Length: 312
Length: 293
Image 1 (cartoon, chains in turn purple, red):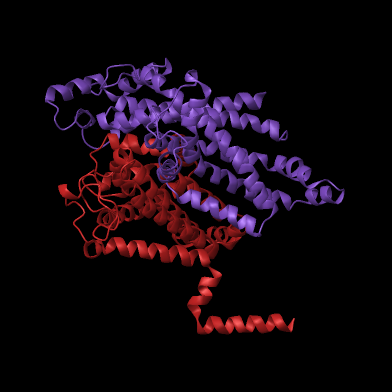
Image 2 (image 1 turned 135 degrees about the vertical axis):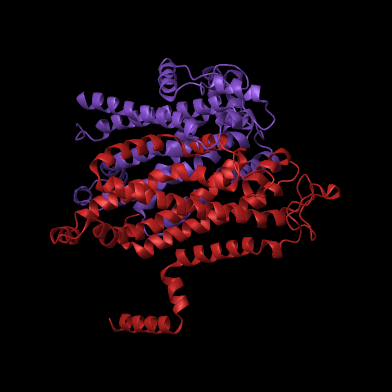
Protein backbone atom coordinates (compact mmCIF):
# COMPACT_ATOMS: atom_id res chain seq x y z
CA UNK A 1 0.00 0.00 0.00
CA UNK A 2 2.79 2.43 0.83
CA UNK A 3 4.33 1.59 -2.55
CA UNK A 4 1.12 2.55 -4.31
CA UNK A 5 0.94 5.81 -2.39
CA UNK A 6 4.62 6.62 -3.00
CA UNK A 7 4.29 5.95 -6.69
CA UNK A 8 1.21 8.16 -7.00
CA UNK A 9 2.99 10.96 -5.15
CA UNK A 10 6.03 10.56 -7.43
CA UNK A 11 3.90 11.34 -10.48
CA UNK A 12 3.03 14.80 -9.16
CA UNK A 13 6.50 16.40 -9.53
CA UNK A 14 6.73 15.06 -13.10
CA UNK A 15 3.42 16.73 -13.97
CA UNK A 16 4.61 19.92 -12.28
CA UNK A 17 7.84 19.89 -14.32
CA UNK A 18 5.81 19.34 -17.50
CA UNK A 19 3.72 22.39 -16.59
CA UNK A 20 6.85 24.48 -15.93
CA UNK A 21 8.42 23.42 -19.25
CA UNK A 22 5.26 24.22 -21.18
CA UNK A 23 4.98 27.59 -19.42
CA UNK A 24 8.60 28.46 -20.09
CA UNK A 25 8.37 27.53 -23.79
CA UNK A 26 6.22 30.57 -24.39
CA UNK A 27 8.57 32.85 -22.46
CA UNK A 28 11.97 31.54 -23.50
CA UNK A 29 11.22 31.40 -27.20
CA UNK A 30 13.26 33.92 -29.18
CA UNK A 31 11.42 36.97 -30.46
CA UNK A 32 8.07 38.34 -29.37
CA UNK A 33 5.62 35.39 -29.07
CA UNK A 34 2.61 37.72 -29.22
CA UNK A 35 3.77 39.09 -32.58
CA UNK A 36 4.47 35.62 -33.97
CA UNK A 37 1.10 34.24 -32.83
CA UNK A 38 -0.69 37.29 -34.26
CA UNK A 39 0.89 36.67 -37.67
CA UNK A 40 2.57 38.91 -40.24
CA UNK A 41 -0.55 40.87 -41.16
CA UNK A 42 -1.52 41.80 -37.59
CA UNK A 43 -1.76 45.43 -36.48
CA UNK A 44 -0.06 46.59 -33.29
CA UNK A 45 -3.50 46.61 -31.63
CA UNK A 46 -3.95 42.93 -32.45
CA UNK A 47 -0.53 42.14 -31.01
CA UNK A 48 -1.38 44.10 -27.86
CA UNK A 49 -4.69 42.23 -27.53
CA UNK A 50 -2.97 38.84 -27.79
CA UNK A 51 -0.29 39.93 -25.36
CA UNK A 52 -2.99 40.83 -22.82
CA UNK A 53 -4.98 37.66 -23.55
CA UNK A 54 -1.93 35.47 -22.90
CA UNK A 55 -1.10 37.53 -19.82
CA UNK A 56 2.32 38.38 -21.23
CA UNK A 57 2.05 41.99 -20.02
CA UNK A 58 2.35 41.00 -16.34
CA UNK A 59 5.44 40.04 -14.30
CA UNK A 60 6.63 36.47 -14.86
CA UNK A 61 6.09 35.00 -11.34
CA UNK A 62 2.58 36.45 -11.21
CA UNK A 63 1.81 34.97 -14.65
CA UNK A 64 3.06 31.56 -13.59
CA UNK A 65 1.14 31.40 -10.32
CA UNK A 66 -2.08 32.55 -11.96
CA UNK A 67 -1.62 30.15 -14.87
CA UNK A 68 -0.85 27.19 -12.59
CA UNK A 69 -3.82 28.01 -10.33
CA UNK A 70 -6.20 28.01 -13.29
CA UNK A 71 -4.58 24.85 -14.62
CA UNK A 72 -5.23 23.06 -11.31
CA UNK A 73 -8.89 23.97 -11.65
CA UNK A 74 -8.96 22.42 -15.11
CA UNK A 75 -8.84 25.74 -16.97
CA UNK A 76 -6.54 25.44 -19.99
CA UNK A 77 -7.18 28.96 -21.22
CA UNK A 78 -9.05 30.32 -24.22
CA UNK A 79 -8.34 29.82 -27.92
CA UNK A 80 -6.87 32.90 -29.61
CA UNK A 81 -8.78 32.07 -32.79
CA UNK A 82 -12.24 30.79 -31.82
CA UNK A 83 -12.54 32.35 -28.36
CA UNK A 84 -13.77 29.01 -27.00
CA UNK A 85 -12.25 27.43 -23.88
CA UNK A 86 -9.42 25.05 -24.86
CA UNK A 87 -10.94 22.28 -22.72
CA UNK A 88 -14.17 22.46 -24.76
CA UNK A 89 -12.25 22.29 -28.04
CA UNK A 90 -10.24 19.29 -26.87
CA UNK A 91 -13.35 17.54 -25.50
CA UNK A 92 -15.07 17.92 -28.88
CA UNK A 93 -12.20 16.19 -30.66
CA UNK A 94 -11.04 13.58 -28.19
CA UNK A 95 -13.39 10.70 -29.09
CA UNK A 96 -11.74 9.49 -32.34
CA UNK A 97 -8.25 9.88 -30.86
CA UNK A 98 -9.11 7.83 -27.78
CA UNK A 99 -10.62 5.05 -29.91
CA UNK A 100 -7.62 4.91 -32.24
CA UNK A 101 -5.19 4.91 -29.32
CA UNK A 102 -6.95 2.14 -27.37
CA UNK A 103 -7.53 -0.06 -30.41
CA UNK A 104 -3.93 0.44 -31.53
CA UNK A 105 -2.56 -0.59 -28.15
CA UNK A 106 -4.80 -3.69 -28.21
CA UNK A 107 -3.94 -4.71 -31.78
CA UNK A 108 -0.22 -4.03 -31.29
CA UNK A 109 -0.01 -6.12 -28.11
CA UNK A 110 -1.97 -9.00 -29.68
CA UNK A 111 0.34 -8.99 -32.74
CA UNK A 112 3.65 -8.19 -31.07
CA UNK A 113 3.68 -10.67 -28.19
CA UNK A 114 3.38 -13.82 -30.38
CA UNK A 115 5.88 -12.33 -32.85
CA UNK A 116 8.43 -11.66 -30.13
CA UNK A 117 7.85 -15.00 -28.40
CA UNK A 118 8.18 -17.00 -31.61
CA UNK A 119 11.30 -15.04 -32.63
CA UNK A 120 12.94 -15.79 -29.26
CA UNK A 121 11.81 -19.45 -29.29
CA UNK A 122 13.18 -19.93 -32.80
CA UNK A 123 16.18 -17.62 -32.28
CA UNK A 124 18.70 -17.73 -35.11
CA UNK A 125 16.35 -19.44 -37.57
CA UNK A 126 14.80 -17.85 -40.65
CA UNK A 127 11.54 -17.22 -38.73
CA UNK A 128 13.46 -15.12 -36.21
CA UNK A 129 15.32 -13.26 -38.96
CA UNK A 130 12.12 -12.60 -40.90
CA UNK A 131 10.28 -11.25 -37.85
CA UNK A 132 13.19 -9.04 -36.84
CA UNK A 133 13.65 -7.76 -40.42
CA UNK A 134 9.96 -6.80 -40.42
CA UNK A 135 10.50 -4.97 -37.13
CA UNK A 136 13.48 -2.97 -38.48
CA UNK A 137 11.47 -2.14 -41.59
CA UNK A 138 8.50 -0.98 -39.50
CA UNK A 139 10.83 1.25 -37.48
CA UNK A 140 12.04 2.98 -40.63
CA UNK A 141 8.77 3.41 -42.51
CA UNK A 142 7.17 6.75 -41.64
CA UNK A 143 3.61 6.43 -40.35
CA UNK A 144 2.15 8.39 -43.26
CA UNK A 145 3.85 6.27 -45.89
CA UNK A 146 2.36 3.10 -44.39
CA UNK A 147 -0.98 4.90 -44.09
CA UNK A 148 -1.01 6.02 -47.71
CA UNK A 149 0.14 2.63 -49.00
CA UNK A 150 -2.66 0.90 -47.06
CA UNK A 151 -5.12 3.53 -48.28
CA UNK A 152 -3.97 3.10 -51.87
CA UNK A 153 -4.22 -0.68 -51.68
CA UNK A 154 -7.37 -1.26 -49.66
CA UNK A 155 -9.43 1.86 -50.31
CA UNK A 156 -8.51 3.22 -53.76
CA UNK A 157 -7.26 0.34 -55.94
CA UNK A 158 -9.34 -2.30 -54.19
CA UNK A 159 -12.16 -0.35 -52.51
CA UNK A 160 -12.80 -2.56 -49.50
CA UNK A 161 -12.63 0.17 -46.87
CA UNK A 162 -13.45 3.88 -46.75
CA UNK A 163 -10.65 6.22 -47.92
CA UNK A 164 -10.96 8.60 -44.99
CA UNK A 165 -13.18 10.01 -42.26
CA UNK A 166 -14.59 8.80 -38.97
CA UNK A 167 -17.95 7.44 -37.82
CA UNK A 168 -18.96 7.61 -34.20
CA UNK A 169 -19.88 4.35 -32.48
CA UNK A 170 -23.44 5.69 -32.13
CA UNK A 171 -23.78 5.54 -35.94
CA UNK A 172 -23.41 1.77 -35.81
CA UNK A 173 -20.58 -0.63 -35.09
CA UNK A 174 -19.83 -1.73 -38.66
CA UNK A 175 -19.19 1.73 -40.18
CA UNK A 176 -17.32 2.68 -36.99
CA UNK A 177 -14.90 -0.25 -37.23
CA UNK A 178 -14.55 0.01 -41.03
CA UNK A 179 -13.29 3.58 -40.71
CA UNK A 180 -10.81 2.63 -38.00
CA UNK A 181 -9.10 -0.44 -39.52
CA UNK A 182 -6.59 1.39 -41.74
CA UNK A 183 -5.69 4.16 -39.24
CA UNK A 184 -5.13 1.62 -36.45
CA UNK A 185 -2.96 -0.62 -38.65
CA UNK A 186 -0.79 2.22 -39.97
CA UNK A 187 -0.38 3.99 -36.64
CA UNK A 188 0.28 0.74 -34.79
CA UNK A 189 3.02 -0.77 -36.91
CA UNK A 190 5.99 1.01 -35.33
CA UNK A 191 4.55 0.43 -31.86
CA UNK A 192 4.10 -3.28 -32.69
CA UNK A 193 7.72 -3.44 -33.84
CA UNK A 194 8.91 -1.82 -30.63
CA UNK A 195 7.03 -4.29 -28.40
CA UNK A 196 8.03 -7.29 -30.55
CA UNK A 197 11.73 -6.37 -30.30
CA UNK A 198 11.56 -5.93 -26.55
CA UNK A 199 9.59 -9.19 -26.12
CA UNK A 200 12.20 -11.10 -28.12
CA UNK A 201 15.12 -9.60 -26.18
CA UNK A 202 13.65 -10.28 -22.72
CA UNK A 203 12.34 -13.73 -23.66
CA UNK A 204 15.79 -14.70 -24.95
CA UNK A 205 17.28 -13.71 -21.62
CA UNK A 206 14.65 -15.55 -19.58
CA UNK A 207 14.83 -18.69 -21.73
CA UNK A 208 18.50 -18.99 -20.80
CA UNK A 209 17.69 -19.20 -17.07
CA UNK A 210 18.18 -22.38 -15.02
CA UNK A 211 14.55 -22.67 -13.98
CA UNK A 212 13.51 -22.95 -17.62
CA UNK A 213 15.85 -25.90 -18.08
CA UNK A 214 14.49 -27.41 -14.87
CA UNK A 215 10.91 -26.96 -16.05
CA UNK A 216 11.72 -28.54 -19.38
CA UNK A 217 13.51 -31.43 -17.65
CA UNK A 218 10.46 -32.23 -15.55
CA UNK A 219 8.41 -32.38 -18.75
CA UNK A 220 6.52 -29.09 -18.96
CA UNK A 221 4.96 -28.69 -22.43
CA UNK A 222 6.34 -26.04 -24.81
CA UNK A 223 3.33 -23.74 -24.76
CA UNK A 224 2.97 -23.87 -21.00
CA UNK A 225 6.72 -23.34 -20.61
CA UNK A 226 6.71 -20.30 -22.88
CA UNK A 227 3.63 -18.65 -21.43
CA UNK A 228 3.61 -19.54 -17.73
CA UNK A 229 7.30 -19.93 -16.97
CA UNK A 230 9.02 -17.60 -19.44
CA UNK A 231 6.54 -14.88 -20.44
CA UNK A 232 5.39 -14.23 -16.89
CA UNK A 233 8.97 -13.62 -15.80
CA UNK A 234 9.65 -11.46 -18.85
CA UNK A 235 6.53 -9.39 -18.26
CA UNK A 236 8.01 -6.42 -16.39
CA UNK A 237 10.33 -5.05 -19.13
CA UNK A 238 7.74 -5.79 -21.82
CA UNK A 239 4.99 -3.95 -19.96
CA UNK A 240 7.39 -1.05 -19.32
CA UNK A 241 8.04 -0.79 -23.05
CA UNK A 242 4.30 -0.84 -23.76
CA UNK A 243 3.94 2.12 -21.38
CA UNK A 244 6.94 4.15 -22.53
CA UNK A 245 6.03 3.53 -26.17
CA UNK A 246 2.75 5.37 -25.70
CA UNK A 247 4.54 8.69 -26.28
CA UNK A 248 5.66 7.31 -29.66
CA UNK A 249 2.17 5.99 -30.34
CA UNK A 250 0.46 9.31 -29.56
CA UNK A 251 2.79 11.06 -32.00
CA UNK A 252 1.92 8.46 -34.63
CA UNK A 253 -1.82 8.82 -34.03
CA UNK A 254 -1.61 12.58 -34.58
CA UNK A 255 0.05 12.07 -37.96
CA UNK A 256 -2.30 9.20 -38.89
CA UNK A 257 -5.36 11.38 -38.27
CA UNK A 258 -4.03 13.82 -40.86
CA UNK A 259 -3.60 11.04 -43.41
CA UNK A 260 -7.14 9.71 -42.96
CA UNK A 261 -8.81 13.10 -42.34
CA UNK A 262 -10.09 12.04 -38.93
CA UNK A 263 -11.50 14.91 -36.83
CA UNK A 264 -9.50 14.14 -33.69
CA UNK A 265 -6.78 15.76 -31.59
CA UNK A 266 -4.31 15.42 -34.48
CA UNK A 267 -6.58 17.39 -36.78
CA UNK A 268 -7.04 19.99 -34.02
CA UNK A 269 -3.24 20.25 -33.75
CA UNK A 270 -2.88 20.85 -37.49
CA UNK A 271 -5.69 23.43 -37.52
CA UNK A 272 -4.17 25.21 -34.53
CA UNK A 273 -0.70 25.23 -36.11
CA UNK A 274 -2.14 26.91 -39.21
CA UNK A 275 -3.88 29.54 -37.04
CA UNK A 276 -0.88 29.81 -34.69
CA UNK A 277 -3.36 29.18 -31.88
CA UNK A 278 -0.78 28.61 -29.16
CA UNK A 279 -3.16 28.20 -26.20
CA UNK A 280 -4.77 25.20 -27.95
CA UNK A 281 -1.39 23.60 -28.78
CA UNK A 282 -0.29 24.17 -25.20
CA UNK A 283 -3.50 22.51 -23.96
CA UNK A 284 -2.96 19.50 -26.22
CA UNK A 285 0.64 19.13 -24.98
CA UNK A 286 -0.50 19.27 -21.35
CA UNK A 287 -3.37 16.80 -21.82
CA UNK A 288 -1.34 14.21 -23.76
CA UNK A 289 1.55 14.44 -21.28
CA UNK A 290 -0.87 13.96 -18.39
CA UNK A 291 -2.32 10.90 -20.15
CA UNK A 292 1.19 9.54 -20.66
CA UNK A 293 2.16 10.05 -17.01
CA UNK A 294 -1.14 8.52 -15.85
CA UNK A 295 -0.83 5.43 -18.07
CA UNK A 296 2.72 4.83 -16.89
CA UNK A 297 1.60 5.26 -13.29
CA UNK A 298 -1.03 2.55 -13.81
CA UNK A 299 1.59 0.31 -15.42
CA UNK A 300 4.00 0.80 -12.53
CA UNK A 301 1.23 -0.20 -10.17
CA UNK A 302 0.58 -3.30 -12.29
CA UNK A 303 4.17 -4.43 -11.64
CA UNK A 304 3.10 -5.61 -8.22
CA UNK A 305 0.70 -7.99 -9.97
CA UNK A 306 3.34 -9.41 -12.31
CA UNK A 307 6.16 -9.45 -9.83
CA UNK A 308 5.12 -9.76 -6.18
CA UNK A 309 8.73 -9.05 -5.14
CA UNK A 310 8.27 -5.39 -6.11
CA UNK A 311 7.07 -3.74 -2.90
CA UNK A 312 9.12 -0.68 -2.12
CA UNK B 1 39.07 -30.60 -37.43
CA UNK B 2 41.46 -30.30 -40.31
CA UNK B 3 38.62 -29.30 -42.60
CA UNK B 4 37.65 -26.35 -40.42
CA UNK B 5 41.25 -25.21 -40.03
CA UNK B 6 41.66 -25.39 -43.79
CA UNK B 7 38.47 -23.44 -44.28
CA UNK B 8 39.55 -20.83 -41.76
CA UNK B 9 42.89 -20.45 -43.47
CA UNK B 10 41.17 -20.12 -46.82
CA UNK B 11 38.88 -17.44 -45.42
CA UNK B 12 41.77 -15.51 -43.88
CA UNK B 13 43.57 -15.72 -47.19
CA UNK B 14 40.51 -14.46 -49.04
CA UNK B 15 40.14 -11.66 -46.52
CA UNK B 16 43.71 -10.58 -47.20
CA UNK B 17 43.20 -10.59 -50.95
CA UNK B 18 39.69 -9.05 -50.94
CA UNK B 19 39.38 -7.02 -47.73
CA UNK B 20 36.14 -5.38 -48.90
CA UNK B 21 34.31 -8.64 -49.48
CA UNK B 22 35.40 -9.94 -46.08
CA UNK B 23 34.13 -6.77 -44.44
CA UNK B 24 30.73 -7.10 -46.13
CA UNK B 25 30.49 -10.73 -45.01
CA UNK B 26 31.29 -9.87 -41.43
CA UNK B 27 29.19 -6.70 -41.20
CA UNK B 28 26.35 -7.01 -43.71
CA UNK B 29 24.13 -4.40 -41.97
CA UNK B 30 26.88 -1.82 -41.92
CA UNK B 31 27.71 -2.47 -45.57
CA UNK B 32 24.12 -2.37 -46.86
CA UNK B 33 23.13 0.62 -44.71
CA UNK B 34 26.29 2.54 -45.57
CA UNK B 35 25.97 1.88 -49.28
CA UNK B 36 22.29 2.91 -49.38
CA UNK B 37 23.06 6.06 -47.44
CA UNK B 38 25.95 6.97 -49.72
CA UNK B 39 23.64 6.59 -52.75
CA UNK B 40 20.94 8.79 -51.19
CA UNK B 41 23.49 11.38 -50.03
CA UNK B 42 25.20 11.52 -53.44
CA UNK B 43 21.84 11.85 -55.21
CA UNK B 44 20.78 14.79 -53.05
CA UNK B 45 24.21 16.45 -53.09
CA UNK B 46 24.27 16.21 -56.87
CA UNK B 47 20.64 17.43 -57.15
CA UNK B 48 21.60 20.66 -59.01
CA UNK B 49 23.24 18.57 -61.74
CA UNK B 50 21.06 15.44 -61.65
CA UNK B 51 17.64 17.08 -61.48
CA UNK B 52 16.23 17.57 -64.99
CA UNK B 53 14.07 20.56 -63.93
CA UNK B 54 14.15 23.45 -61.50
CA UNK B 55 12.37 22.03 -58.40
CA UNK B 56 10.27 25.19 -57.97
CA UNK B 57 9.48 25.80 -61.65
CA UNK B 58 5.71 25.69 -62.23
CA UNK B 59 4.11 24.64 -65.49
CA UNK B 60 0.35 25.13 -65.88
CA UNK B 61 0.22 22.80 -68.92
CA UNK B 62 1.90 19.89 -67.14
CA UNK B 63 -0.23 19.52 -64.01
CA UNK B 64 -0.75 16.14 -62.27
CA UNK B 65 0.88 14.16 -65.10
CA UNK B 66 1.58 10.46 -64.42
CA UNK B 67 5.21 9.24 -64.59
CA UNK B 68 6.59 9.46 -68.14
CA UNK B 69 9.90 9.75 -70.01
CA UNK B 70 9.92 13.55 -69.51
CA UNK B 71 8.82 13.40 -65.87
CA UNK B 72 10.08 10.15 -64.29
CA UNK B 73 7.95 10.54 -61.14
CA UNK B 74 5.19 12.63 -62.80
CA UNK B 75 4.26 16.22 -61.90
CA UNK B 76 2.42 17.78 -58.97
CA UNK B 77 -0.68 20.03 -58.81
CA UNK B 78 1.38 23.06 -59.90
CA UNK B 79 3.11 21.22 -62.73
CA UNK B 80 6.44 20.91 -60.90
CA UNK B 81 8.64 17.87 -61.61
CA UNK B 82 8.31 15.39 -58.72
CA UNK B 83 11.64 13.65 -59.49
CA UNK B 84 13.60 16.92 -59.29
CA UNK B 85 11.78 17.91 -56.11
CA UNK B 86 12.47 14.50 -54.54
CA UNK B 87 16.21 14.84 -55.22
CA UNK B 88 16.27 18.34 -53.71
CA UNK B 89 14.15 17.19 -50.77
CA UNK B 90 16.93 14.83 -49.69
CA UNK B 91 19.13 17.84 -48.93
CA UNK B 92 16.66 19.15 -46.36
CA UNK B 93 16.25 15.74 -44.72
CA UNK B 94 19.98 15.03 -44.49
CA UNK B 95 20.78 18.56 -43.27
CA UNK B 96 18.18 18.28 -40.53
CA UNK B 97 19.19 14.72 -39.62
CA UNK B 98 22.90 15.49 -39.30
CA UNK B 99 22.25 18.88 -37.67
CA UNK B 100 20.00 17.41 -34.99
CA UNK B 101 22.34 14.46 -34.33
CA UNK B 102 25.33 16.78 -33.78
CA UNK B 103 23.46 19.40 -31.76
CA UNK B 104 21.50 16.98 -29.54
CA UNK B 105 24.63 14.92 -28.84
CA UNK B 106 26.78 17.97 -27.99
CA UNK B 107 24.20 19.52 -25.66
CA UNK B 108 23.33 16.13 -24.16
CA UNK B 109 26.98 15.33 -23.39
CA UNK B 110 27.51 18.58 -21.48
CA UNK B 111 24.33 18.17 -19.41
CA UNK B 112 24.95 14.44 -18.93
CA UNK B 113 28.52 14.97 -17.67
CA UNK B 114 27.32 17.65 -15.27
CA UNK B 115 24.59 15.34 -14.05
CA UNK B 116 26.94 12.39 -13.67
CA UNK B 117 29.51 14.30 -11.62
CA UNK B 118 27.45 16.68 -9.51
CA UNK B 119 24.85 15.19 -7.20
CA UNK B 120 22.99 18.49 -6.77
CA UNK B 121 22.79 19.18 -10.46
CA UNK B 122 21.80 15.56 -11.02
CA UNK B 123 18.69 15.80 -8.85
CA UNK B 124 17.40 18.80 -10.80
CA UNK B 125 18.53 17.72 -14.27
CA UNK B 126 16.97 14.27 -14.05
CA UNK B 127 13.60 15.65 -12.90
CA UNK B 128 13.60 18.07 -15.84
CA UNK B 129 14.50 15.22 -18.23
CA UNK B 130 11.65 13.09 -16.80
CA UNK B 131 9.28 15.96 -17.51
CA UNK B 132 10.59 16.43 -21.06
CA UNK B 133 10.25 12.72 -21.79
CA UNK B 134 6.62 12.78 -20.66
CA UNK B 135 5.77 15.16 -23.52
CA UNK B 136 5.34 13.32 -26.85
CA UNK B 137 8.33 14.50 -28.91
CA UNK B 138 6.36 15.49 -31.97
CA UNK B 139 4.04 17.71 -29.91
CA UNK B 140 6.95 19.39 -28.13
CA UNK B 141 8.48 20.14 -31.52
CA UNK B 142 5.13 21.40 -32.87
CA UNK B 143 4.75 23.72 -29.86
CA UNK B 144 8.27 25.09 -30.40
CA UNK B 145 7.61 25.64 -34.11
CA UNK B 146 4.39 27.55 -33.38
CA UNK B 147 6.41 30.03 -31.34
CA UNK B 148 9.15 30.69 -33.89
CA UNK B 149 9.37 31.71 -37.53
CA UNK B 150 9.78 28.61 -39.69
CA UNK B 151 13.24 28.00 -41.20
CA UNK B 152 15.53 25.00 -41.47
CA UNK B 153 17.42 26.30 -38.43
CA UNK B 154 14.33 26.46 -36.23
CA UNK B 155 13.27 23.00 -37.43
CA UNK B 156 16.65 21.63 -36.31
CA UNK B 157 16.27 23.34 -32.91
CA UNK B 158 12.68 22.18 -32.43
CA UNK B 159 13.59 18.54 -33.14
CA UNK B 160 16.78 18.73 -31.04
CA UNK B 161 14.99 19.67 -27.81
CA UNK B 162 12.94 16.45 -27.44
CA UNK B 163 16.00 14.33 -28.38
CA UNK B 164 18.26 15.78 -25.66
CA UNK B 165 16.93 13.69 -22.72
CA UNK B 166 17.89 10.45 -24.49
CA UNK B 167 21.52 11.60 -24.75
CA UNK B 168 21.61 12.97 -21.21
CA UNK B 169 20.36 9.68 -19.74
CA UNK B 170 22.88 7.67 -21.75
CA UNK B 171 25.85 9.89 -20.82
CA UNK B 172 24.82 10.03 -17.17
CA UNK B 173 24.54 6.25 -16.86
CA UNK B 174 27.90 5.83 -18.63
CA UNK B 175 29.58 8.35 -16.33
CA UNK B 176 28.16 6.68 -13.22
CA UNK B 177 29.53 3.28 -14.26
CA UNK B 178 32.88 4.61 -15.57
CA UNK B 179 33.47 6.49 -12.30
CA UNK B 180 33.40 3.17 -10.45
CA UNK B 181 36.05 1.63 -12.72
CA UNK B 182 39.40 0.86 -11.02
CA UNK B 183 41.38 3.00 -13.48
CA UNK B 184 39.35 6.09 -12.63
CA UNK B 185 39.63 5.44 -8.92
CA UNK B 186 43.37 4.87 -9.36
CA UNK B 187 43.66 8.17 -11.22
CA UNK B 188 41.77 9.90 -8.41
CA UNK B 189 43.98 8.24 -5.81
CA UNK B 190 47.21 9.53 -7.37
CA UNK B 191 45.72 13.03 -7.40
CA UNK B 192 44.90 13.49 -11.08
CA UNK B 193 43.04 16.73 -11.54
CA UNK B 194 39.32 16.67 -12.20
CA UNK B 195 39.45 18.05 -15.74
CA UNK B 196 42.12 15.50 -16.68
CA UNK B 197 39.98 12.64 -15.36
CA UNK B 198 37.02 14.04 -17.24
CA UNK B 199 38.81 14.57 -20.56
CA UNK B 200 41.28 11.69 -20.53
CA UNK B 201 39.47 8.90 -18.70
CA UNK B 202 35.73 9.45 -18.83
CA UNK B 203 34.95 11.26 -22.08
CA UNK B 204 36.81 8.88 -24.45
CA UNK B 205 34.82 5.96 -23.04
CA UNK B 206 31.50 7.61 -23.87
CA UNK B 207 32.38 8.09 -27.55
CA UNK B 208 31.44 4.64 -28.86
CA UNK B 209 27.90 4.43 -27.43
CA UNK B 210 27.38 8.08 -28.38
CA UNK B 211 28.22 7.46 -32.04
CA UNK B 212 25.63 4.67 -32.14
CA UNK B 213 23.07 6.84 -30.34
CA UNK B 214 23.74 9.79 -32.68
CA UNK B 215 23.04 7.57 -35.68
CA UNK B 216 19.64 6.59 -34.30
CA UNK B 217 18.90 10.23 -33.43
CA UNK B 218 19.74 11.17 -37.03
CA UNK B 219 17.24 8.58 -38.33
CA UNK B 220 14.52 9.75 -36.00
CA UNK B 221 15.21 13.42 -36.85
CA UNK B 222 14.76 12.71 -40.57
CA UNK B 223 11.32 11.22 -39.83
CA UNK B 224 10.46 14.10 -37.45
CA UNK B 225 11.26 16.73 -40.06
CA UNK B 226 8.87 15.01 -42.46
CA UNK B 227 6.16 14.74 -39.76
CA UNK B 228 6.52 18.42 -38.85
CA UNK B 229 6.37 19.54 -42.49
CA UNK B 230 3.45 17.18 -43.10
CA UNK B 231 1.56 18.75 -40.17
CA UNK B 232 2.34 22.22 -41.50
CA UNK B 233 4.73 23.08 -38.67
CA UNK B 234 8.03 22.33 -40.35
CA UNK B 235 10.24 23.52 -43.18
CA UNK B 236 8.73 26.59 -44.94
CA UNK B 237 6.40 25.38 -47.73
CA UNK B 238 8.41 27.06 -50.51
CA UNK B 239 11.38 24.74 -49.81
CA UNK B 240 10.92 21.31 -51.41
CA UNK B 241 11.20 18.79 -48.58
CA UNK B 242 9.78 15.26 -48.54
CA UNK B 243 7.27 16.14 -45.81
CA UNK B 244 6.13 19.27 -47.67
CA UNK B 245 5.69 17.31 -50.89
CA UNK B 246 3.59 14.68 -49.15
CA UNK B 247 1.49 17.37 -47.43
CA UNK B 248 0.80 19.00 -50.82
CA UNK B 249 -0.05 15.61 -52.32
CA UNK B 250 -2.66 15.01 -49.62
CA UNK B 251 -5.37 16.93 -51.49
CA UNK B 252 -4.85 14.98 -54.73
CA UNK B 253 -4.08 11.54 -53.28
CA UNK B 254 -6.83 9.87 -55.32
CA UNK B 255 -5.68 11.49 -58.60
CA UNK B 256 -1.89 11.37 -58.44
CA UNK B 257 -0.60 8.92 -55.85
CA UNK B 258 3.00 9.34 -57.04
CA UNK B 259 3.32 12.79 -55.43
CA UNK B 260 3.05 11.07 -52.07
CA UNK B 261 4.57 7.70 -52.96
CA UNK B 262 7.97 8.76 -54.33
CA UNK B 263 9.08 11.18 -51.61
CA UNK B 264 7.65 8.71 -49.07
CA UNK B 265 9.72 5.85 -50.48
CA UNK B 266 12.87 7.98 -50.50
CA UNK B 267 12.18 9.00 -46.92
CA UNK B 268 11.65 5.38 -45.83
CA UNK B 269 14.77 4.23 -47.68
CA UNK B 270 16.90 6.96 -46.11
CA UNK B 271 15.70 6.22 -42.59
CA UNK B 272 16.13 2.49 -43.16
CA UNK B 273 19.71 2.97 -44.34
CA UNK B 274 20.59 5.13 -41.31
CA UNK B 275 18.97 2.61 -38.94
CA UNK B 276 20.86 -0.29 -40.57
CA UNK B 277 24.06 1.72 -40.28
CA UNK B 278 23.30 2.27 -36.59
CA UNK B 279 22.63 -1.44 -35.99
CA UNK B 280 25.81 -2.30 -37.86
CA UNK B 281 27.88 0.22 -35.91
CA UNK B 282 26.50 -1.15 -32.65
CA UNK B 283 27.48 -4.69 -33.65
CA UNK B 284 30.91 -3.49 -34.74
CA UNK B 285 31.71 -1.23 -31.80
CA UNK B 286 29.88 -2.88 -28.93
CA UNK B 287 29.56 -6.64 -29.50
CA UNK B 288 28.30 -7.27 -25.96
CA UNK B 289 25.09 -5.28 -26.46
CA UNK B 290 24.70 -6.68 -29.95
CA UNK B 291 24.51 -10.24 -28.73
CA UNK B 292 21.80 -9.40 -26.22
CA UNK B 293 19.45 -7.58 -28.57
